[in-house]
Each structure stands twice: as C-alpha cells, then as structure tokens.
Length: 492
Image (cartoon, rainbow, N blue to C red; front, side, top):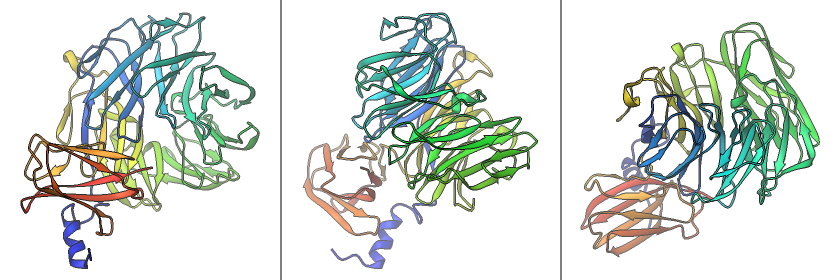
C-alpha cells in the first residue's frame, strides 16, 4: 500500500495534530476507600503487559476495589492491578505494631517475578505470608510470582529502601545508607562477600535508591554522594552531593549510563563533584558522567515559575520527565526539553503528590503517592474515606496521552484494548460483534504494516508478528464505518 502525504495526514488526524505534544490525562486512577489513619504508596513498577505493581504503608483498614487489608497484620502492603485499574491481588506483612512497617520499593525481574523491600518496626518479629521471620530485623525483602504466589521472605539487618535487578537476574539492595548487597534470587539470602560500604547519611533516605546499568555496574544514592561499583563491587567513582541543609531524591540513568538526580536546599552552598551552587531555596537537577562521575551540569530549575522541590527526573528519548513541587507545594509532572522548555505541564494539587513515577512509554507515566483532601484530577475525584481530614491516603494511576487499556472510539463505549503497551500479543474485546470488520495497523510514518479482514466474534487477538518496538496506530472499520482508533505501543 502506497502512503501519500495526504493519506499520512489523514491517519495522524485520527489521533490529534501532534501526538507527542499533547498534555496527558489521568487514567485508571484508584485510591484507598477505607480506614481513618495514614497510608500512602511509596513505589510503583509496570511489567511488559501493562500491569501496575505498587507498595507502601498503612496502619488501619486498607481497601482497593474489592480487596481489603486489616490492621494488626503488618503495616507494609503491596499489590498488582491491570492496565484498566482492576486490582488483581493485594498483600500485606510486617509486625503488629501500628505504623511501624512500610514497603519502600518494588521491582520486577526478567521473568516477571516481583520483589518488594522495606522496613520493619523495631523489637518485634515480622510475619510475611503468615510465616514469621526467625528473629527481629530492621528490614525485609520479599519475592512473589507475577500472579501473587509467595516465594520467599528474607530478613535484613538494616532498613531496605530500594531494590534493583542486575542483568544476571540477581537482586541488589541498599541497606540503609550504609551498605549495598546482592541477594540469592532463589533463597533471598545475602551474598555477603564481596559487599560494598557506601557510608552515606540518612537524610531523606526513603527516597534513596540503587540502579544497575547495561554493563551490570551498580550505582547507588547515599544521600551525600553517588557511588558507582563494578560487577564485583570494586568502587569505580564517588561523587559528593553535600550541603548543610538539603534533601536528595531518586536517581535514574539515561541510555548511555549517565546519572540524573535532583536535590533541594534551603540556604548555604551545595557541592556536586567540583561544582558549587548557592542560589537557594530551590530545586536542582544534575547529570553525572557515567564513566567517571564528573558533573556534566547542575541546573537550578523552577516549576511553574516558582521555587521547586524535584523528586525525580527520568531522561527518555532526548527529553526529561520531572516530578516535583512548584509554588506553595503544588505537585506537578512535566515533560521538558534538555533546555527546560516545557512540552507539557500537568498540575496536580498541593493536596495530591506523587512519591514515585515510572516511565511506560512516550508521554505515558505511572504514578503513585497520596492525597490529603478531596482533589479533582481530570475526570476523577479523589476523596478521603470515612470523613477524615488532612490525612495521607493512597492513590495510583496512569498519566498518559491517549488511552491505557481503553480504546478511543466514536461508536461503541465497550471496546477494550489490553494490554497497552504489549510485547507479544494484545486483545480487543467488545460487547458487540466484530462481524465483517477490518483491522489495520500503521507505523509512526503512516505506513500500513498489518491488516486483517472479515473478522468476527467479540474478541480480536493482535499478534506482534515480528514488528519492531515502537508506536503504532490501529484503525477498526466495520461496514465502511470507523468503530475505533487508538495508539498502541509495542515494547521489548
């Protein structure tokens, strides 16, 4: 099929004039609907089928959808939802001490198994999956299957704020701001030799993390420095990020292994490697050369023209996705160019803040955090349960251009696409019959890459068919009428 410029323009018009510069909207938002005490989501992750994994803390009854967790059976919690926001499973664990446990980090390995890490209330034995640990610990790491089956629980001598999976499918954890270890993926036991002693500070440590680059090197955030180790825990470089009163947040890597991080300071000076900054109070973004740790830039960044506190910077496809607070602590999620020109700015509220954002695809993020009042986010309204006020309450959901799991369609409201993004196959489902329908897939250049005719039934399966990863557009036509159009992302 030959695609002319006119045809290409028509195809793109189905999805908006510029699919890469639209401001995203909130989708599949879920919140806790029970209890009267503090709870919040601290970390989120997404698998290749578009399912969301989330974790956090609670001290009272917690309810997502039809799943309920009761108090007194552990204050750490974690769960899984599909791309349309349906809860698939929800777990909890820890001690009987109210408010003492929390799950700080969640991630997945290459097999889709789920790892959760966090902290345990002191001087009590923690239980997970109904099995008590052998002694008292300050931290824990858990492993579950993707379907929610318990595999193991490991007690750790220090609180565990973050977990990453290296390229050998081995978990790597940061124990407090003091050490970094590998764990045996089969048993959860610490691999004690060799180990790395990072000896950082404990300011804002719940947002300090560990990441692994493509060469299996380990980069860890220790609060007052960033350190890089090779696969055998030999220190490659250490770059100070120091000040008298400041907060440091999550680090991320770009495709070249360079390190992106952020900090906030009230006054004085901050040193990042050889660079000193003294314009405060404000938030800063910095980039470290992955090969030697030298700062490539340290930039003061305003959000909505005001003093900012930036929690996370995710470099993707030549732009930055930023989560932070602007004026009066109003939360924002932005997409900006490397010169900080704003491509879009999604304002949340000073009463609703994300703790973690996760990149799904171009202009599509997953987020999790908490809200402290009734908050309107596009078509969703978050409300505090049981009439409580000024109490953190968990929420999570997608912030995406287009639809996540739901097709943009003009004729039927019942056509669902799941998962999106997908790596192997996806499914179209409808309450109506697809008899005599034609499904066409176009690539981002408007070229037809697949077509299926004379369809029938209420389910259509889309197979990848060796298509490369990337953004595609699908069009579903029945009896010369367009039933649905949508963007769909294929990922590796």
